[in-house]
Image (cartoon, rainbow, N blue to C red; front, side, top):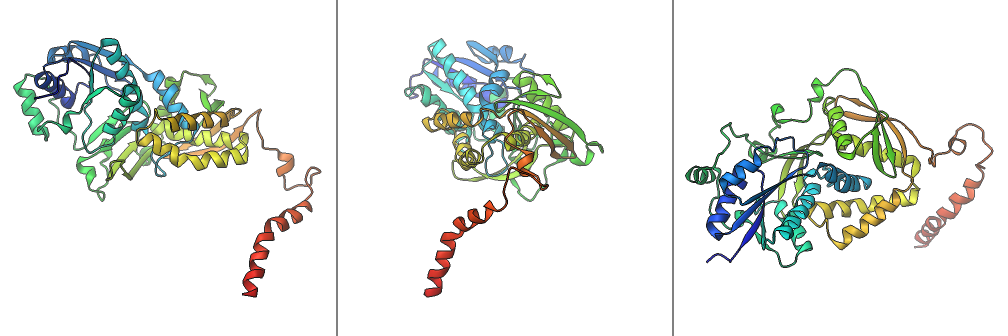
Length: 402
């Protein structure tokens, strides 16, 4: 006997998997199902969602535009930390999941639902990210993860279920890989990409041209920052989502932001992922550049030492954890005064910093110059070096005695 469930809020995309899940939940649990779809800039029209969900059996449909919240409250905070996972991945999927889960739980409270459901598989990271977020907001919430319960373990089985229940399914040829997108990135996994020796097909990419096909002339852009966040591109003030979308366009047409990695999933296996993050790649390079002239050395080095841990927290799904809150407070404190302008050249997959300036700069040409100056006595360096060499000299003396 299935556990008694009265009302479920389902994270719903309208694709094959979640459409089947919607009908399957109704059949197995004989419950009311409310669907929730988030527009976080995945580039798909969501006008069809409500009609399709209602036709498939949903009692109510939520379709929320969360693009500005996603960028302002999730992307920008992470990029204040120059976040990166395993040296390459800018965490586009990982950053989005807690926002979706949070809104899903808000709807569950509004609607008096006793359960939530998602379409993540039992092998991936997303199941962890969704469910850790759910539990952080309601320790007693019931969670239904169909991929861990049902016997519909192939696309053929899903298609047959959909046909049997008169569920509309895509008629176009299935891509030989899976994708997930939002305003920060698009990911490609599975299928032909499971062979780590196979080059990703060029026609797979959606956000960027090949660097080989990018313009032969560099494109120069300027980004303005205020306290660690970008606020303008080429002198034009923009909202967070508009700004990131603008950087995606600029980066995409110059072949910027493609990576191909084999990453370590939280559940224990290695997985190949190909990602496009044009705007995020530009943003991270520019942010590092403005920090270089506005942030204290020791503060920067301490913050940088925390980036791997911070990235692990996000990647593994602990966005709403106490340690994440603590680290975010620290990181945000480091960003006070990280304001100014960065000029970059975008050229055939490269994002090159060519200038940076700030009213709050800590760079002083009078101190750094190789020319004659009256603010720094080079003789002072002798004592500085001797004091720092003292323990090394003592160690050498001791080794010589041995």
